Length: 68
Image (cartoon, rainbow, N blue to C red; front, side, top):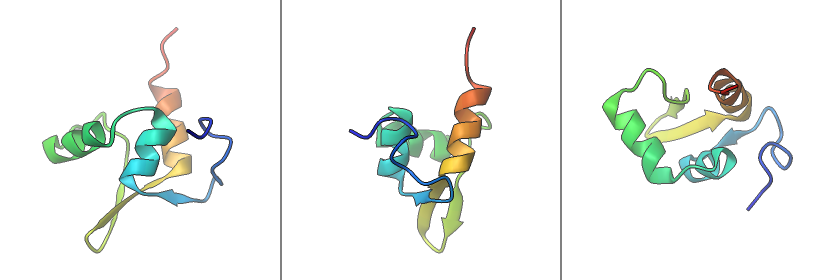
């Protein structure tokens, strides 16, 4: 498994599986959150039928969900 944030370029777009690996979640979790329309889910982009996640957006989302 890649270390979170170190092996991904900041301008890279990731597949659902790659985004899940980056966040250490299961791809199924991201799929469920997307299908439920959860407002607190990581932002994604839709290119045709393909769903992709920006590394920059994932980092921002992760920071916003940091607990003290």
